[in-house]
Length: 262
Image 1 (cartoon, rainbow, N blue to C red):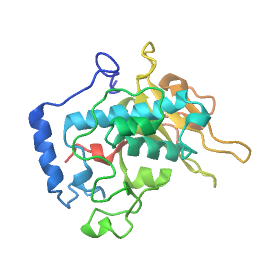
Image 2 (image 1 turned 30 degrees about the vertical axis):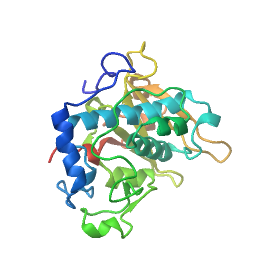
Image 3 (image 1 turned 45 degrees about the horizontal axis):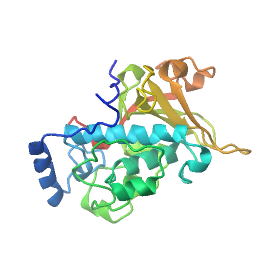
Image 4 (image 1 turned 60 degrees about the vertical axis):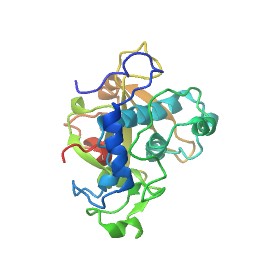
């Protein structure tokens, strides 16, 4: 299975890339190229070229999503109200510099010692705080200021403009990938789940997990759930089973910033 295992060694062990890689990556930050090599709408200055940066992003993104499952609703960021909000929060915070000031403001029950990504740190990019593409088309320089990117993106925009299809076979999923579903309903037709792989918090478990926010109903707030992939594949309602035979399952999607097919 392509799903990656939990971080090697201690959960709190930092992962560092060789110095040569990081010096070279740092050079690209000072002179960002306004190009889009993949033609997917994501500028190359946001792409994580360094494998160490890619791994750091995956670890932070999935940790920040999973830890909300263990937090009480009162402890969670107030912005997390549905599946897309959980994704936006974990994505944005995964791209920050995780220093002491960030740790003090994050209000998390534990802070892992993963490296922050080195190429850039949110919100210090040419797009500022507007991380998410919200309309179709390849990236052009005018997108820096004409509303092509925003701080908010719903599940559909995340799916269509910020990720790419890997497969409709869930066995192809890797840590930090997203599972998307689309149903013919008015309220929240798009739904998404985060593949977190092996738990980074409960290391005694060997299961592969997904985590997601159910979203609110007319009578109650949403809940953050964590299911093993086995549980999800046998979910009582077949509409939520990530199977190629399920017409509501759109497939496994990966973030454009991790696109390595350039």
